[in-house]
Amino acid sequence: MVTKLAALILLVVLLAALLGPLLAPYDPETIDLDQMFRPPSAQHPLGTDALGRDVLSRLVHGARISLGLGLLAAVLSTGLGLSLGSLAGYVGGRLDGLLMRLVDLMLALPTLFLLIAVQSLVPPHFLTVALMIALTRWMGLARLVRGQFLSLKEREFVQAARAIGCPGRRIVVRHLLPNTSGQIGVSFSFALADAILIESALSFLGLGLPASQASWGSMLAEARASILAGAWWVALFPGLMILLVTAAVNLLADEFQTWPAVWNHQLRRGRRRPPRRGAWRSAPLP
Amino acid sequence: MARIVAGRLIRAAPLLALLSLISFAILHLAPGDPAALLYGVDATSQDLVQVRAHWGLDRPLPIQYLNWLAHVVQGDLGRSLVDGRPVAEIIGERLTATLALALAALVLAVVAGVGLGVAAATHAGSALDRLLTLLATLSYSIPSFWLGLLLLLLFAVQLRWLPSGGLTSTTRPSSVADALAHLILPTVVLSLPLLAQFLRYTRAGFLEVLQQEYMRTARAKGLGEGAVLLRHALRNAAIPLITLGGLSLPQLLSGSAVVETVFAWPGLGRLLVEAAFQRNYSVLMGDILLVGGLVVLGSLVADVCYALADPRIRTGSS
Image (cartoon, rainbow over all chains, first blue to last red; front, side, top):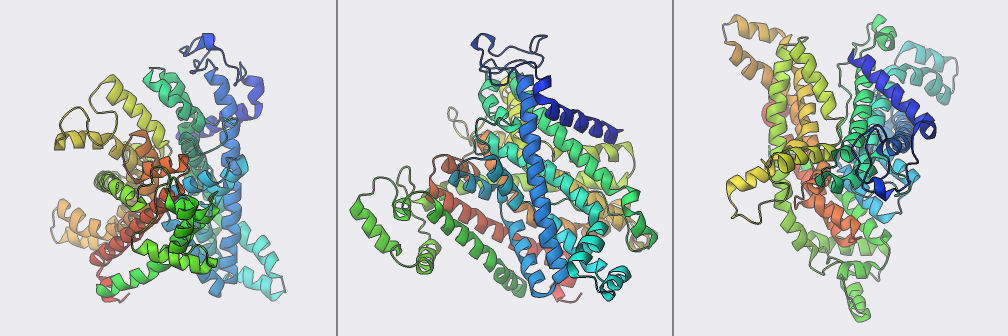
């Protein structure tokens, strides 16, 4: 029930983000000072903000920024985690030790502090924000992939592949990675939810995306003053969108973890029990 | 025990080194002259020459780093770029507020998280269990600053039950009750994601422990259910929780940047955000160094607790 609802929410938001300009009733940037702080009505379904801009239109356009950045950051961090984890797990030895020390170090850093510091050094840009988030969020997957590789490496099918002269790169790509795809999918979803949250926190602090790219987080930053003026709708809806999307992604990832299809072939071999829910959740965000 | 502490300190060295390198990099990557960064506002060119000599900024980079490090270990972090006050002094003022908030949030997360986790595990599969698990997922999907704003709107603006922010009231004489009232909302918001994590870990750990044979033995020899859960189950399920507690400090301190900003809490997190806004790099640098130091200290404490809870680690056998 909850899972289906989560999937539905995600689908609707994705569609809204894709169709954005077609759906939005108004231009998100048009300032209309006659229409300041209008509560939700037939004309403006979610009301207007301090500059008379339509909140619904801004939400729809913000979806593209928030989801786009979240996806980009999740792709980057998954790529980074996969490559470093594979490297550590497959090559092993001193490189493995070094990379795992790096993982321990990164996990011990208060990453939001570092992000804030870096954002004060570089001019705000979509790509740098995504890259910086990815750089602080790859460690969990790297550790996971490494662990999987270490155990898969000893299995017969990998040794058989090596015996017939498969090059290392092919073993990693064709034999090891497909066997970790379930975990990679779950980890990607968690990374997406986290990236959306981190971006919204940074934008809320005024240290995220440039003002021209208004994400849900930047809308909330602007809403801080409005909330004290009693315009609750300006703050409620962007936050609700962030909550709905991250919760939906997290719930789906939780569900995916317990899906039999993902674990079946491993179960049949009696190698492994399906993991507990939440077993790979790394530290969630503020 | 001394061996554990010593070993942990040695392992912490790379982390401290990395943190110092990051801070040093900020000093050099920041736009402008590092000497001006360390001297603060209104430096004349003569001052700058002096500062450069004092901090060794006219030497090669590795030497500069060592020089800078020597100053830092002695607590000399340079001066604020905004008002010229020593950075160490500014940070010192903010330290207590952050520690109080982080500690309160940790205590709340542990007490409520473990309690609810035990309740969920002992009623596994029930409606209560499903509700708690769902709430846990929701609470680390919620943007903390948004939750903070909504709670402010409800409890401070509408109901007027709680103050809207700050450490104490400025109008009324300060009292313990007043300080506690200010602490409630930020503590709840900061601890929520951690609380959810404690809940999940406790639930998972308990479910595993409850199936063990020594649980049946404990019940068979006639122990009451309370004693079985507390003395036999909790102690065994607590070991991953201690790890979680040790890892939670970076998370709490990260979270403090957002929560302290929402509630105007004068701590290190808000200081960092202010410094980032004002491009006050010397304060930024000192703040990151100190927070890193706190994290190292936290994981040291966690390791000692770990050893206390698990005799196998204490005696060195596996």
